[in-house]
Amino acid sequence: MRAITRDLLTREAVDWHQQGLIDHSLLDDLLARYESRGRFLAALLKWLGLFAIFQLGLSVLAFIALASESALVAAILLSGISVGLWIFGVRLATHPRQLHPFTGSVLVTASLAAAFGVFILLNMALGGGIEGQTIPMILLLTGVLATLTAYRYHLRWPLLLALLLFFHGLGAWHAYGGHGAYFADIQEPRIMAVVALAAIALGVWHERHLENRSLRRCSGFGALILIFGLLYLNLSLWFLTLPGGSLDWVLVFTAAGLGQMVAGARLHDARFTGFGIVFFSINLYTRYFEHFWDQLSLAAFFLIGGALAMAFGYACEHWSLFRASEKPR
Image (cartoon, rainbow, N blue to C red; front, side):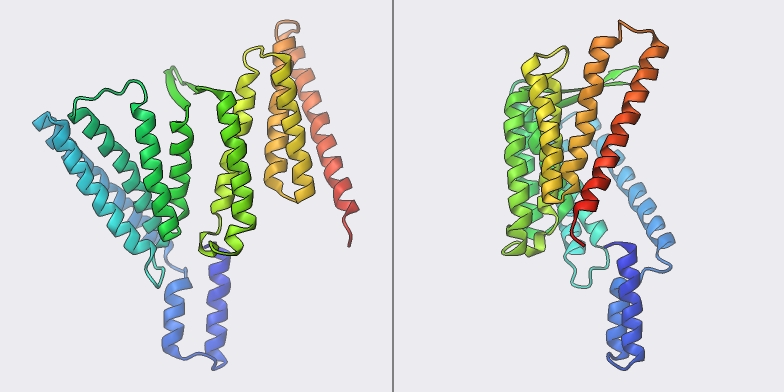
């Protein structure tokens, strides 16, 4: 819950008490749930203490596992931590008074991340390797656990983890290349683009229909699914144009960017518009880089690129104002 909402509810509760609408005991219950003054330092100290305890506990577990030189022992220790975090996190996140919902969601998500480590260690203990489809299958399995937890207890953080695991399990990879460089790759961008399109459709349907009917307590789930779908759709199409991709994929990427801007304007949804503008701009810069990096001097390249970017930004702003002026008052 946003701080401004908490402050509003706190003021309203105090006003109700002063007007005699609620008694003092109910006021105390409402303030315990919504009042946020003076909690910053306590929350900071709590998180620092929790982080310190968590790190010390992991160091002890790592020492025991190294001393025993057994992946099975490490898996058993980590599974105990994972189950404990999950149970404790669910209790905090689902407490009727909602005293620590954020902390509970974080602990549940951490427990699911630990479950991924447990599966890896169990695979090692059983003599399995990490080649082939082993890691993707573990990612998808952990994603299923995260999804079930998210929908069972109506928690968005586990769903965020689940979406990351699903897309990475389906072939989205990243790695550190050394010297401050990172690499991102998608195993089969064409398949990923289709999956992302399905995720976009599911997100819109989830948000506009399910969350208004049977899944009212899962508010925000559809938005997460939609955003991940838009992100991986655009990344897939972008990667298909690199390096020096075919003209067909360049046109598809361009059409997708324009289509998202049009869809955002028609649906009055800034998420479509935002992703469309950002990746349409990335597409233009990529094409500009491919064709003119070796043809122009460095100064001329950035000067012309900056001027074009300003012109594009002005055009988008002018179009936005024009659309706003067309709306009925």
